[in-house]
Length: 625
Image (cartoon, rainbow, N blue to C red; front, side, top):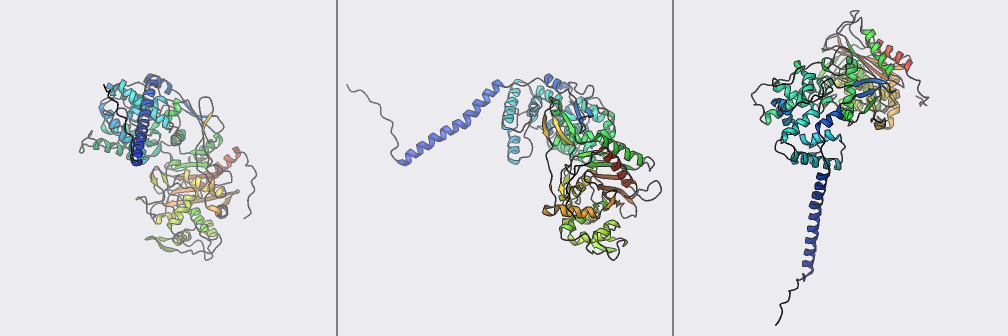
């Protein structure tokens, strides 16, 4: 009897067949590794990781954030108001607010498995947006881990999936909406409704109010109109409104209007009772911390302390010098003082006024002839000299606009004499000669930012065209920006980035973040020469370089803004005087407002007091002129 034998497995007989078989094996192993390993890792993480309860998270959020002066003394506290973390059950969150939040933050919330693959893919490919839906945001807030690492994102996805399996969507939303910050020291919708509208949270909320509150969630320190102005807050509100309409929550014909008149001033609702000028500092510091990766929620979770660059003595001096000088001036006068250390960019004094929530130090105003030092710097970059003869026309055309000024510079006009005599015609003529792009580029190199709040600076309303207004300082700039750009001249052409935050410390006192050194030459190899030549043309004032200037009110002979901007080697200070509504201004004597009277008096008063509290700088060798 013959036993059947197994047929041997046939090996590929040709090299081509052997190579194909080897390739299939590699492909199988690769596929198994790429799919199997992540699945195993996901499953292990699913078993090990857990989501904390909202009550536990809320308990950790109830901490005070202390902001300090540069010497470590207390500047102010960011304290949650009573009831700021009152838990609001899901059933008590009005449907309109619920829909507005979901439409803005996570339109697939009701259907996804804890995350939106489309959003994550879009964020990965474009680099725009975090790709995080409501569930992921809750995980991020509840863990307090906001580091931009693959491991953190992987854990976030695992926990988002797990909580979606374990809890209903209603429970997840309830947890999320009660731990997120809406700004002004509030956590949860009830505190937010009271802080912004002075109302109880109930079904009487309007679509407009709901859209406003939903818009705060992304970045409350930035989107609050008290911090960034009505124009920015309106744009954010319109974004949420369009999401509500585009996703069918609100009919296209249903009326919605930005609820600006209903929004309460922070002075009436904020938890930490501070004066208006302190509130401006608080908002600026929190917004800067947010940009540096430390939003208010993270600071409170970590019980962190923010050390500012502000000097207590200079801060008091800025407030006193402005108040003392304005107390006998017309009641419509407003003012701001900003002082910066040219060597580091540290803001030593920041006073945005104390008349209301508008921060005049952070609000753009037309610099007028205070812009001329940048025109001079542009000339120096293009080979002109400070004592070179220049034209002094009384009438000329520039970019389609006619300019006419009295000839106060004379037949032997130079940039130096034009600056000293406050002549306008020569600077407009020189702006025409070197072109508007050269002026804009030089001002930016000196330190004027490209954009403020997403709006390009030194541009027409289209955001691209540079018009004739640049020649006469018509484009609005913030006192903060002018002080910072003038500081470049004070530092021999070394440009630094103005900042109010020096360090962030954790609850143990260890430094977890520190402002970087941003000093670099503003104008290349010619930086020191250009800065010294500009300084040499500015009127000396007790050893300091000072430029006063004005911005005219339309085509009238009167002014609406007046400036005094100047510096020593250790301090660059900008003083602005104007009003709320860009009106023609006359001082208490009945004379038109000019920079060399009220603003210059404030500047001198502050600089005199400030240098009494500033230690003398270390001797620095200065190159000869």
